[in-house]
Amino acid sequence: MGPYEGLLEVMLEYCSDVHQGTASKKLRLLSFYLDVLLKQVLLLESVGCKKTLVFDDGIFHNNYGLVMPNSLEQAMQKYPEMATVANPIAIIHCSISLEENIARRKKRVQKGRGTFIEVGMDDAELETISRESIEASKLKVEQFRAIGVPVLEINLGDDMDKNVKEALQFI
Image (cartoon, rainbow, N blue to C red; front, side, top):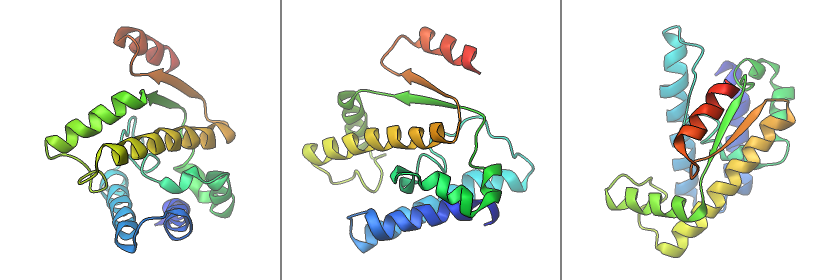
């Protein structure tokens, strides 16, 4: 796995030591993450596309281990080659209100496009996972800030034209 070994280790540590789900859920999380890594990253690299501009559902978003304090920095110290993939030029962090996040999840589930985690959840469980997801996203962004990656915060509830202008100026 080369430079991605550290990210896999962080995810594995999270699933074995932190995540409170069942063994099957932990395995599904790891399987999903490995699938994202193989299909969205390694496949692109194999055809010479090393610079990917946007991943809305990529190797950082889906690595729940990055919510653990200093996990990214520690992994990069242990695996120096990780710096070639885990040190983006910049991040545009898109946030959304808890209410809108819940509404979007419900809509996806109703349309049959919910994740394996969301399917079968009641409203209280969807609220919990939405709250945890929003908090995890903030914690991951802080990991990147800690290693010096510039971050632009975009609120998806704001005017789209305003957000686009800010993003273009940032880029």
